[in-house]
Length: 108
Length: 115
Image 1 (tube, chains in turn purple, cyan):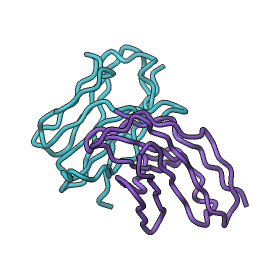
Image 2 (cartoon, rainbow over the protein chains, first blue to last red):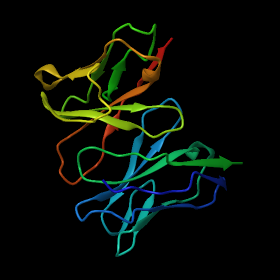
Image 3 (tube, rainbow over the protein chains, first blue to last red):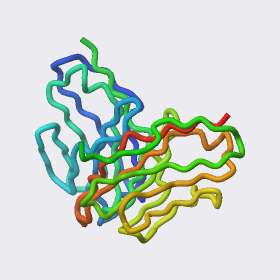
């Protein structure tokens, strides 16, 4: 399973766009890139998934360059409620391998 | 609420005791997963079922751990002879069998404290 590397923490302010970059240099051909969000004392929640190029949903956008060795999760106009841990995963469609994630703190 | 449910939400036990956790997945999901999460770490995969078949087990799952999913519905995770190192949040997740989607739906977890 591909190992991912992402920043341990990030700070932002309400209304700003936040971009969290993840590197996955050893990603396999059949791996997808998936992002999850986790609030304290809750299970993770799926945000978005992509294979290449750009994917957008109502919550976020995911940018994946052609070599797929990295990806960027973009959260538009964050609010205080977006304070959470964000996990980047590169894996096939069965078991998920989580790293330590990025703790995003959004301040007023 | 038709999400994944777990019971109990909290469990405090003494070292050496056995504990059992239950997970009820989303009803139409045929895949069920167990994870363990300790403070400051991401969830670690333990095992997963497709219907009633246990298809994969992590090497983290020692012989003191056993999981079942009779009839492919709810699942139980039992830990025998608990140790203090077993203290963690135990998360259950379920997903439909969609080959191209890594969306797993997680329950709220069972927090285990071993004294």
